[in-house]
Image 1 (cartoon, rainbow, N blue to C red):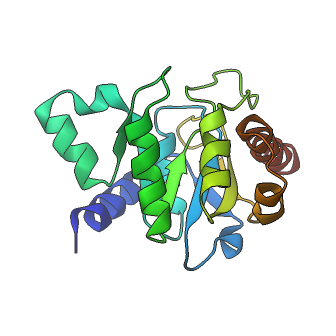
Image 2 (cartoon, rainbow, N blue to C red):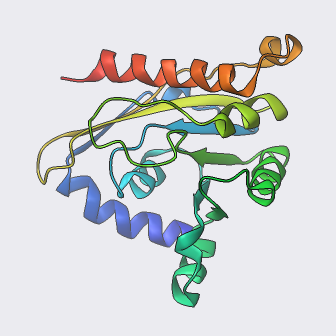
Length: 194
């Protein structure tokens, strides 16, 4: 068992009963091939929660600050995260994400860029659209419906994959592609809350 699988098992044992996590829509998740997983962001626990509910291992884009200390850098690398400098166009992070997608892996990101504490789905950054248009990945929208309260139900919903082939051919902008993704996440929240 590698460290990712071990960490996933341990985190699952702790978080699933604590937040009574209910997962919906995993049947939509492609069993193979590259996937760009785009999720709303409501809490610091979102990455591990998505990590334990998604059917496949995820390579998460994570804020560069988490890679500054040697022990946290090692942990981030062991759980397949790679750094992104927030607020900048981080070419290295974009290259790394595209490399994983070309290899047929699942790349996870939170298009809002930071936690949205209102419970509403905010505006997404163009990076999500960039990956959707520059790769052949299917985009899976995901909604986390909280709030995180011990022993109250937390819902994680995986939506149907969005195929960007036609939009790539029509050369839509990264911003427009991101807005398509965010609107799908909003729909999932509206359909599944309560």
